[in-house]
Length: 285
Image (cartoon, rainbow, N blue to C red; front, side, top):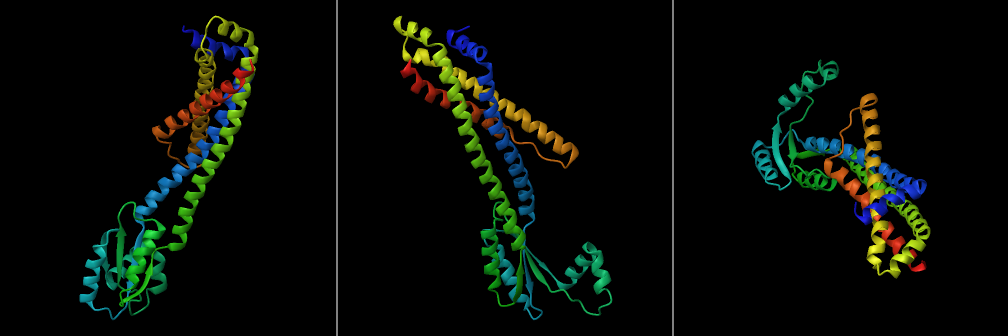
């Protein structure tokens, strides 16, 4: 076994408590990030499904001229954000309401006239369903003189997108905060390891060992600690995911790229914290 690897593994035996604490803090930080990431990812999946169904409905006046409506339908269909525009007549709207809303028949079944207006249902293209885009399309459609009202669920759409932004921001802030704490603990562990081996390091320098050669075991120790913390975080996140999916409601697991990024983040935190600690404390030996 190479010397650098052997010395890095020996460090875990020399200070198992500090090493375990370091890996545990990285695991905790990435676990919390993983939980928020899991929530954010599932929120995004729900949003994607909601966005696919987002539509702008323009209700038309009863005196709308059919030729003008047809021309407007063509113009709206040429918008870059629009995928499809469908004209819904008053009769079709009534049939749809009776089919999809059983209570509608009980309320309006005795009326002699059709209370529903004709409308244009505008379906948007993928990735064109954000609040600003939808509002822009709705504003342009409102300009037509025969359009009486435009609806697209602005209240709930804004709240859903706000929820996604809040989840993403919370994930980032918590992850950074716990990563800093983990880095401080790793730095403390590396400092103690350096002082425990100060005599050995002095002898190595006397026989011509370079600073890079002395640093490598400590850097590798930090890397292993970070990798271990990342793997523990994935396991803990998976346990929560499986528990919630089995007993509360079904969730979707994180993509492989997110898990690889999580382990990679642990490794980066570990090796960077080690590099800073080694650079600082080797000067004191």
